[in-house]
Image 1: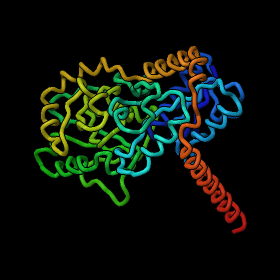
Image 2 (image 1 turned 180 degrees about the vertical axis):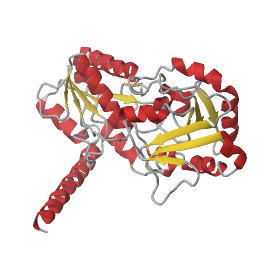
Image 3 (image 1 turned 60 degrees about the horizontal axis):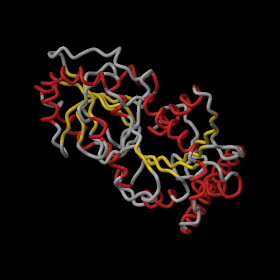
Length: 359
């Protein structure tokens, strides 16, 4: 099976999409599947669109390229759209519209949470399913983690690539302020790993720059519990990685977090996180045992993707027969706009290079 993934991997610390693609590539290669990152080959079996924003540097193809490929290069390829975004997560105004338009170019849709699937961001008569995200259990593992002794300060941690305020900074600020109280200063410590909003600084908490891979896994494992206060999180990877590292979680009852964290931690509503923290301190050892059975690892996730791809290939004849790529004329117009924006960025890049040469 030859799989085309519309994404260019980053070797540094990056968001959850980068980790997903890395896991899928590794799993596919272990099963002797071929991976390509463009639509140049004529014998592609599965086309996976992970992001329709072709004006972003890391995205190698989008819905317009998929339509062209299916119409003129290889009609027998199966196009799949993995949806992991929405306007609700960052208060944007364009993402849901773009997702709906781009979704017309594919045969099948995968959501990373049931919460995301309920939004109006795809063609609802199209076949779809939910595959939950999974962290790499070879990197994020509980073995190096030590249990809290109940008397020393409880070490709390979270990590986010995005500096967006909706990642939960309203709660993280409350936690930081709580450390000004001498009583709580003796009870807890808080570490934030990742990028911060511009001009933002913690006063009493430890801040580490973004790290990834084994270094991130080792750092998370130095703590006792994980907190995620992210608002309208479509799924994410951060909380999964924390739990896999042996950390019981307190999480905001928002977005897809309950789907991933229910049974494995304690939820809180809005900004009222302190009762959840106190309850976790009381029930820490119970949740410490429960999370040993946490199922959302990368092996489970990638197996579900690859099994689905194999099933779709078996149904190729019916899928191709029922395909109609001309259902949404606005899709073509929108994608030409995004391709133009992408070309505009490329032109700007070369202009900067030329300027540097002649300076």
